[in-house]
Image (cartoon, rainbow, N blue to C red; front, top):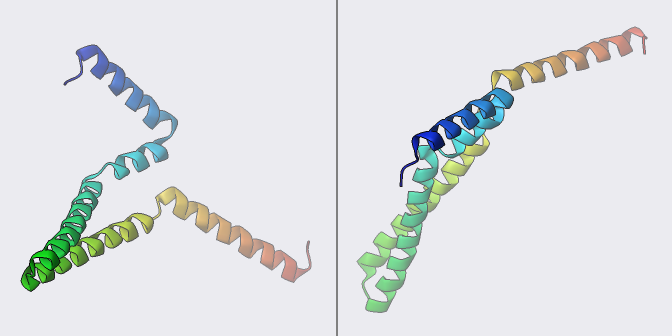
Length: 119
């Protein structure tokens, strides 16, 4: 079901306002709905399918199917873990780098003042 022209214009306006008010939040929101999350979903489905195939293999006594299911589940879990690791260790934005730099500079200045005897 598609949006009407009026609804699409309202949605576009709301998106522009969001970017104007809080660009960092908007970019984080956009990153969370990226194809990476679809890849994580496929990895979860692969993991589930692997576990199901292990159960089926045990019930029908087919070791090859069990091995394939185990490898599928293992690969799916690996992809889920790697996606979570990539998401949590995303590079800092230039503003965050600048804030860290200014924080370290302020700490160094305070340390130098203490060493010089100024409080």
